[in-house]
Image (cartoon, rainbow, N blue to C red; front, side, top):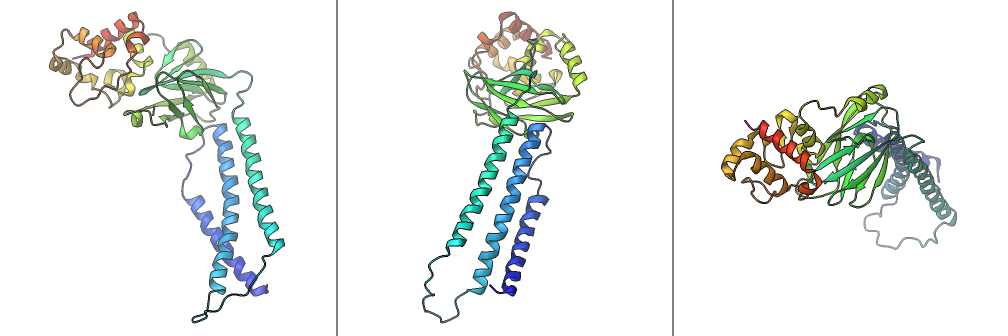
Length: 330
Ligand code: CUA
């Protein structure tokens, strides 16, 4: 190959590589990494992307150069010269990609192993998914409708489901993990900055899938210990705690509970809804709506309530919840 041709080939390759690099760098493909695992996954992503850009530049250069230089002349209907391939070239274009793919595999395997390592003393939080809410249970037995994690400490989530398959995902912390009924799947998170991120269900799980969201508050380690000691003390009514522990706010709006779910009826309008339903005293109507949700449906809503609240929520807690909701109905 002549020197001039090589320079042309290299120039095309550099331009193609520069365009691909601009697309990679100028578009914000990934959310900012909020944890150690996310940092490692981002590293794998960029490691792979750099290799891909290199391969793309070489292929684009050879392809464009060939189309440009070896284009058939007008009215030239003759066959091209017979060629028998090029053994050295074929060895190179087999060996180099093989090496690159092997490198990506090794880096990925190391990151996967590191990301599932929870250290000697992780905080263990049980995560329960159900249509359409998340609940989080801490080692002290307290349960919340949102997740609070300490910064800089390994947390091992043990993820399960009460009904269908869901999937736990915090985009800024990377990694997804399925929530499967009857088993516990682990996910290790090590947040590196204090922030609030969304918790998203990322497995189609029914009509309320798109709104099956919660959030994770990442707080300084010292603040977390204080929170764990103090949180769950009856800050409002015990009924409010039951409301939060069962993830009711995932689907319902109730201002006093800070809930703004849109899947189920608006509980701030409970009194009007109960009057419309005309099914006896308010408390009895609320109780029935929780344990036998299909007995009466507010017009415009489908029955998406978990069918097992009657057995899942202990009777005394259920009474507190009914009392709390009846008290909110103005
Ligand atoms: Cu739960 Cu989608």
